[in-house]
Length: 71
Image (cartoon, rainbow, N blue to C red; front, side):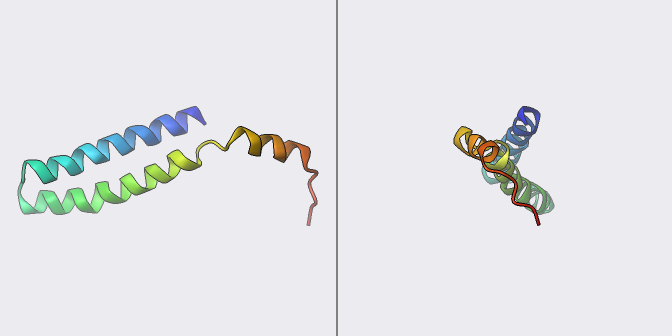
């Protein structure tokens, strides 16, 4: 899980830097479109991965105490 979380943080940081580059330096229009099509969804998805990568310690303990009900 730590590898997933660190990869998600890295993707999020790269995405934010690319978006800031497009906002600050005003590159050509096709570059802005490419950045918005690729890096905005990646930022949203990586932020979701960061939040879902590891559950709370209380939740993990609760999962081990509850028996599996089955189908």
